[in-house]
Image (cartoon, rainbow, N blue to C red; front, side):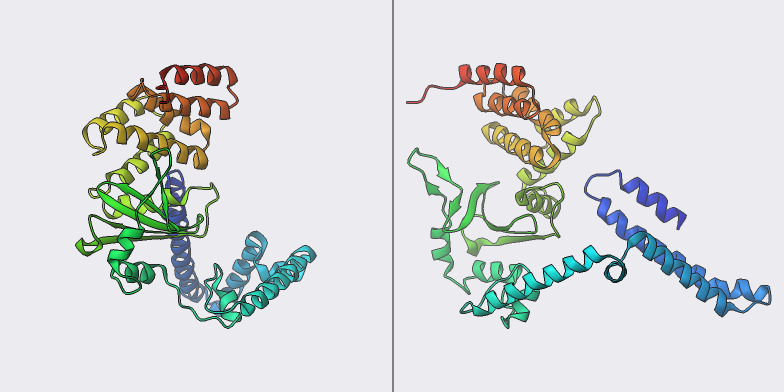
Length: 339
């Protein structure tokens, strides 16, 4: 138990594995309590005591500790009037939702499947199965999908990253198509020239994000782990997050060396990727952390108006008005006149 607690405290300091540390601590505590409970018998026998009362006392102390510090919902229901009122309110809302969903014709996809179940709707939707069924042509011909999954051209000549209800982009030589459930679920399908040439399906499931991490960041974390050589942009996203959190004075030099030698992303694509990563980091970790990323981009691309504009915006978000205005002015001088 002591080793498990020490490992938990150390891993809580790391990025993105602190939740896993909690699970491992729970396992260590369960094993330790189980062994202690079992050995109470031998300890009591050596003193000619009865083991049963000692074990009952141990269970009582554990139960009291859990009730005191974790406040489980059954305990709150018995002792807290506000909690009981909240339960009644949520119960009424759920009943209204069940009635509303039950009145809808056809099959329904529910964020909370209990609502669909109580409304009498079948469980027909599965993220992985549905994406695989699309990719293999079981729901729609793959040739039709490939035509639909093309970014729409805007009147100004650029691309819209949405096509027929799907977000669509081209990265690392792959067409990447996805759909989004906020920070709770993200599904992405990636294929090269055609679906027939093979594809990847990534689905990220979570119970939400306290830091409002973009779902695209979450699924790119999955891609970076599953296929780092195939999806270098996803690896770059992860490295930028680590860089933003690294307060070591040598972090910038190390990051520049990695970008130069190992990132696999070059040229204008690297500038755009760093800029996009900066905005994602600003959303989840705050403007203070994102400032490092935007500053790095201006150092790498000093002639980019967009890089300086993003840095100015970050300073403005930090309340540094004079610096922001100066950088906005610099961005305008670098911007190419529109034709």
